[in-house]
Length: 504
Image (cartoon, rainbow, N blue to C red; front, side, top):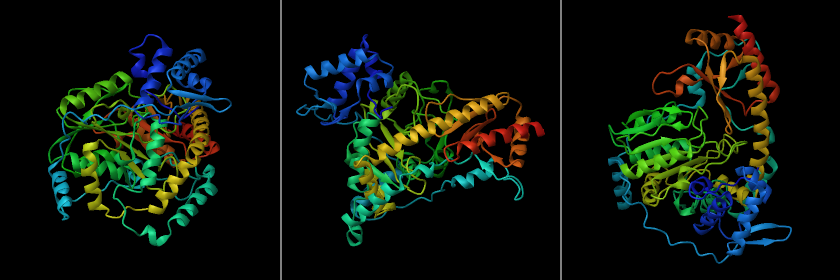
């Protein structure tokens, strides 16, 4: 399945016929620069399969684009975005400026003077291992080999090590050690920011520009810094309930107040919250896996415009999607520049590569750069940043994603099927078209859930209690990460859990 996203849902609401909706969605993406000159469009069969269309509809849309001069065809090569298409002039940005917290205002002023700023104490989020300590006792030292479904990272056995090492060697040769010590923009290496922008334009439908991207030491650093810049003492921030615990800790560390937002089968339930900051995971809600509906995406953007609010969109693992029709991110729909799009490479590459990024509204570029310069005057991992840019430019990253997408999809299907067959009386697994985590609702009593967790640990099986992600109490549920385990271990863990249920 190609890695390609366009705003088809938006145009499907306007046009009755599918070929017209597709034509206008592609035309809009070409005009706004999301699909720049030279971009190769998917084959008609691939695009039809991706969006559930007939090949005839896709062919008709392509023919119309060709007749209007938006695309060109090359026999045997495919369909490409044509040159000479004039994009519209950039608008004036958001209708109202984004308000900074008092700390954020002091940072911008201090860095503009070349001075310093008073830095509040941060309560750092615990590592996944530390958080896992609260999720149940570890098995005894003597006993079966542990099988942990807690912390799912990339499956390193299939990582293209030789190709990555080649990119590292190229980065070292092209800019030797002395040059790497030169001053650099706090936002990170320009080459990587440009490569990320190109990838997001094609794969996520975001009209990203390199100058609006800031690199971070992981996505959590981006979230924490943004929270400090945007949230004042005692001010509310809206969080999905449940959500990643690092976000609620960042809000608490900045003196903010977490406002839990309910979820249902269509994602977060919009309300007219009296707040100016919202954290949301629309591509695949963490941890439940629910995908936010297109209508609700529109509602959230309308709320942000009405409240002069900022939405931080955490797109933490949507690169791994193996089913369902792609929905454009909030950032791709954002016309008011109210959305910050946060992404990371720690799930797609390897966990030790601590590179995250944020695509910022124009009015936040300077404040974020100022805060970043305060914390990290010299960006970390510059050699790795340049190597990653090379890896992306030469196509290695997309090839790696396609390979891992197939691998994870098969693994997820095998694990889900076994869970439903063997533990269907205990858990109801939420549907998931993407991601490296399965969310399972417990079907029996809370007391039996606690007993089951202890019995499973006794048989060497660990999984994450979803309670650690909740802001307010809720029904028992478990989270199973599967990407880091081979299929034999995944299945063995299920049968150990079945035996553990028999123990009690």
